[in-house]
Length: 214
Ligand SMILES: C[S@@+](CC[C@H](N)C(=O)[O-])C[C@H]1O[C@@H](n2cnc3c(N)ncnc32)[C@H](O)[C@@H]1O
Image (tube, rainbow, N blue to C red; front, side, top):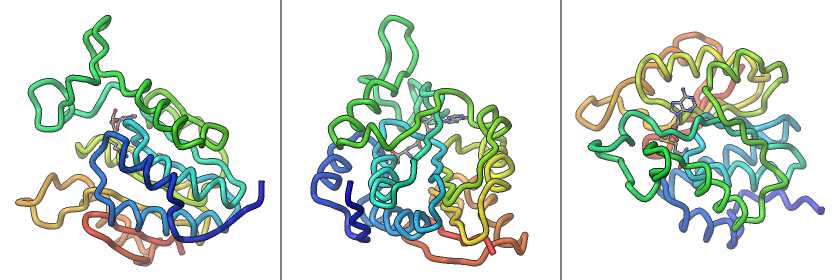
């Protein structure tokens, strides 16, 4: 395949992004895609925590395809706390009627198939800290959009950022400095990263924060 490394989202990928269930607004998706195109120049895999139905995955995967690298995405596919029945972000159409639990894996596979990106994604089905503990390769990008409790966000930060190569990008979703706007766990790991001295700011869009590993 001929690489066409543009920061523009291709039309078919944009359509698949818009059609996929998920929570990421278009402007944040565009910023995530630009970050992925930038990071993919390192020639290293792009890692996502929090696949859900693949809405953000396909943006990373399109950038990965253009650069000839792999997108790796990890999720247990049982949904986060706020996606469970009775909570704000619950989608009853994503419950497996046989087992009575959330299962976003079939929707994710449909999203990936419709976007034509199956060959460029390695999907890990399981818990993020367990995958991070086994992981041994340097990464060009780490996108943290998994569990939004302090326990989960901290584990994602501690588990995956040590694998980020110098010059690689750490992208965190749902960073809300004001508690009135949303939960604070992603904001707290963003603060940890900034205060660690290991990262410099590389961009922001909405609740998306982009940091470069120095
Ligand atoms: C906010 S959604 C991800 C949204 C997705 N990035 C998008 O833009 O469409 C969070 C996802 O993280 C997953 N998740 C939460 N905690 C996790 C953990 N400890 N390990 C793996 N996946 C987890 C949930 O199952 C859920 O699908």
